[in-house]
Image (tube, rainbow, N blue to C red; front, side, top):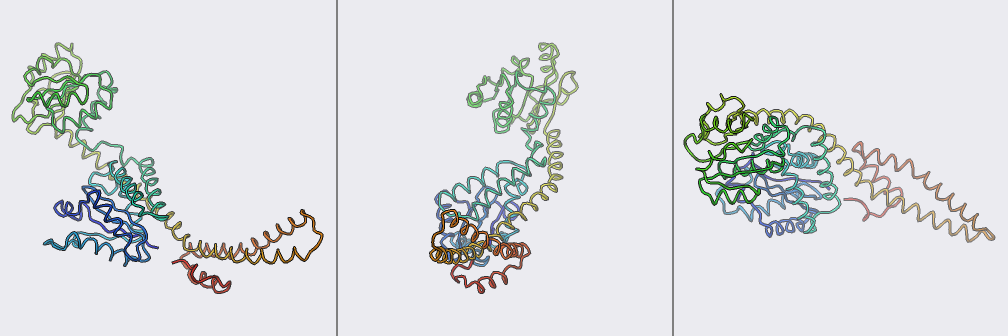
Length: 426
């Protein structure tokens, strides 16, 4: 049996093509079962995210798998003006195994090291289990995949450095205040960036959160989510002495805070430091604020430089991760190859044990007056004898499989011991 991966992702296809292959839950169920019942295909799994759609199949040969996926894709793209095959990649066996290991560990993501993909692969696996399209090989493959992802995250720093602007902002705040628990935060703006920052800050245990927005309803919505206090934008100055951390991300095209407002807040704070993050473009905070004592001001360029440095650090960790992937691919391939000789070993043991049992019964029936202890001794001797006879052939067969030249030996054993042809592994 061979494992095959056919798919497209953010590097091989534009979003206009990827969205054409976006599968609903019902569409995913149909595709999984349609592929499984295609002649020659034994197991199937489909990974479908906004950045990739990949088909994993176990089949007798790669050609059957490719034909199955081609047939499925024709149903989606036969009326399109482009050729879907121009955007597809195909990985066979060891390459397919290594690819899913890399994908699940975040090594192949748009943002290297991002953890969401592991959960998406787990969801794809759960769906395939529900649809009963996975068997021995894909079950073992996926469990190994998750352990490889865990090993990469444990043994490397691939995911240890922040690579989102909002998370970097929180990490910088932690460097200034060490522990964010007990500190107050003000969000000026209630958009997506502010919400992401609020999520990270909330996870760090900030004590108080004030949300200011030009539209008070937007401020209320975000404040309620994090048990904060909503205020209108024109009440910022009145509350500016409260926050230790100020995050600004409005759509205003001018400075909404300058040195005078911050200086007044510092006086009321008795010079306690304040960390200001201006992630708005255009900037909302006058850069002269950074000249004030006890003020730490970072704008989008500052945060992006940290993000870029962290991304470069993650890329350096890829080499360590690749060593892990190579090691785990070899281990999994060895297990797959062992499946090829197992049926022959089982058949051989069954055949020899059947002969042993028949001869033992004949011998015991002809030997009169044996005690139970004597019968037990003779039975044990026959077991020991057959085990010793089989030890070298089975050991040699396993060695040959590891060396990649077991085919001739398997055939010889089946011929010499007259093993049933229909028991021969495919």
